Length: 336
Image 1 (tube, rainbow, N blue to C red):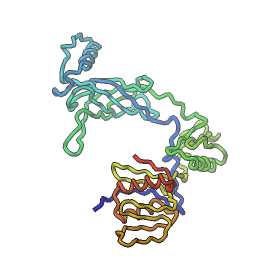
Image 2 (image 1 turned 60 degrees about the horizontal axis):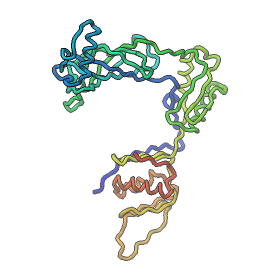
Image 3 (image 1 turned 90 degrees about the horizontal axis):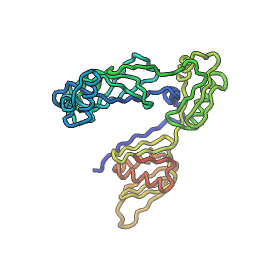
Image 4 (image 1 turned 180 degrees about the vertical axis):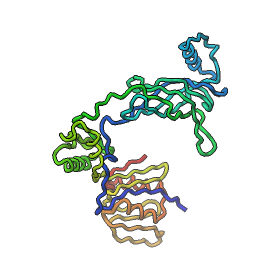
């Protein structure tokens, strides 16, 4: 029996307004997270730390030197310590004293970080400025099958933000919104909805993914309330005709606006005609499985017809690629 392919078809009912909140389809320029990274030392391991990593020994020596204890490199060689990289995410509008979760990754030959404690380590952003410091006991979670990835650990609330992000948000006179899925039609609709709500021409679609909004006089100095009102507006998004196929998993994702021109397909023992028509079988010819579809059919109809014939994921993807090559697939085809 031929394999059954995984199929996901994204469709919308043409007669129904499909509206999405503006906050779910766009973000405000400048309001974003920042990645932090640092280097540190984990101590207290039960002989599972770095054994031959020279940089770990140098790091421990330097740490002890800063504490006023002078030692040589040979004196700090221990498998109870490990060098690690630390990562964290700094949320927008973070303030001094806020706590962050951090992830710790072994970078030497340590076999496990279980039971270790991270020693105070600075966390830097891309501009090399220190925004937080991390320290605390490491936790290693269970993967669910009784096994754990022992060289990666978490420290919940293990970092403390040390400096505020410089933002003057409330007094801004203009905001720029960026669509997650750039589209000229969607951008124009969003600007129109905002202008109708505000009662004037305050929003302008600069391009397919950017909308500039001027803060009205009545909201000056109160950007939070203004954006809370704007984010709640409903906009009907548009989308390009697109088909996405994943050859590894056999998954096919099809947009609602995808259409196929009149075409006949023959693939192996499968024969199919888009646009209708009669088929005749020559004398002595083996009977083929046949599916007939009307012209201007959607890819969803095509896939449904092919699925009834029991085609494999590989056959489906090959057919879609060949339809695209023939110029009959009126959509963008993306193969993952």
